Image (cartoon, rainbow, N blue to C red; front, side):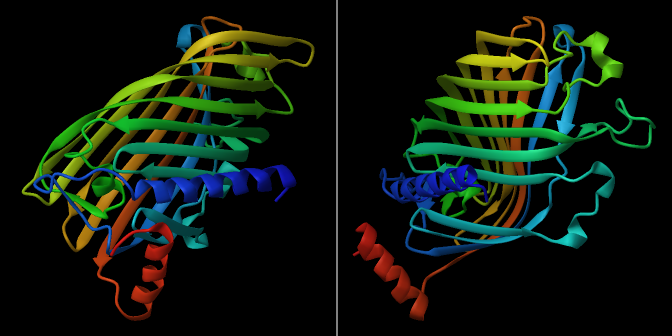
Length: 347
């Protein structure tokens, strides 16, 4: 990796470990609503696909261009113990055959930390190589994709939200499966967002055949830094203790500085724009097994010099997970006991 990306990875890793350790400390649960398995080892296997989409919205948002990356479907393994989660995934060739969509080189760092009192999301996106969706948009044939191997999207961001009803509501039950939500419950969320990013291409983002529909038709470079307070709500509906469906949404109104460039002109402006983070999950959970399908989507709105046009960067992850909780025994128990002593947990 280049040095700057290595630094980003290092900082993101430190952020992940520190906050994961903090996630295991927290409030006393209402056991009639949430049962915790902090002292057990939760193992999982999963299929996952991450993405970072760049959208260009035309005059009055009547027209839009959606640049998608050609990312891999990954097969992974993971484990959770006392709030520390480690997942490792790999893209298998037989799962990834979309050669007509071009090649995307990417490093995608998404960390969703579900503590007992806080939910923290970290993003680090480094993508290069996109195609226009749907097939035929601005392409030479209706059966081909318009490819832009030169477009690069880099974004770093973090959001943190406090879970007000943390005694009776668990994010971890739905997304990590080391807790079990036995009764339906929800919670108001309060927090905020910070995000910084850059999008650039060798030529304008808008294909010449569509230039008349977009005020920002000549823009080939975009950078932004935005931050703002947010509010949201999350709710888990439980059927017969084991089956559940969770919906969660937060919105922030971010104040940011935005820079745009054409080949000849530079623009700079300050704008307010929304940031929307949605997550949906449904599945089965118990004291032993967990099964879930989840979707996390973060849409960061960006408004430049043209008031009736805009951009957005949409980062997300689809995941299917099968998990199993175990009481540690033998050598694994000894290793985890050393970890308990380090973090001051257990007896």
